[in-house]
Length: 287
Image 1 (cartoon, one colour):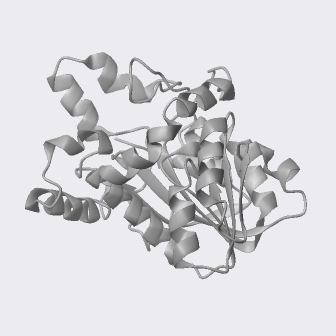
Image 2 (cartoon, rainbow, N blue to C red):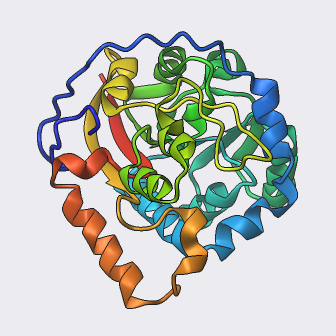
């Protein structure tokens, strides 16, 4: 199924690690930037009008809100959706947003210009030590997979270790390399290429007409990339049977079916299928 031991959120984490060569060429950040530039003006509306995506985002936010901190960095901040939420809910903290997309940065800066103690910069995770040579943050969060578009995940992890305070926390979500239900549906529809797309060395995203340049990871690859600077404190899978955001139109927003599927996800997180959904969410502690 997917490399991982199926531990529950609070159980000790032990990651099997079958070695896999990764010969794909480096991710082109110019292409990634252009991809997100193309919908920066409508991103906020897309993010807030999709009830399936909103519920997953709320789960990501709750994972961040477990921690009492004084400074936060949003890696892949987009139009500033989560920066605005946290700054309104926890005023007085220091905030930084970082995004590789020039247009997303412009939109976020315009939206958040009046928020004290908050700034937005352009770059990727590897740029952080140069952008912030003397700055440290108690918590870094990244929602909906910006780290999937980093050229090298291990180098990104090293850069994050340099900008997080001693004992600081990362709350990171990744688009999963194994999405069992989506692959099964694709096979049933006679689309084997889509069913196997996530298992290739380069993933082209959700749109055939506007491809993304990204790489997906198994759980053991994530854990290995963040060693030895971080230890896994908590992990969970989302959208295992709960629908992915791009299937939201098939469900009634306040329907009992969506509630039941959400509960199904929570139960499956106690099984080896925890890592077989659309998203992997990790909390990692700096050591």
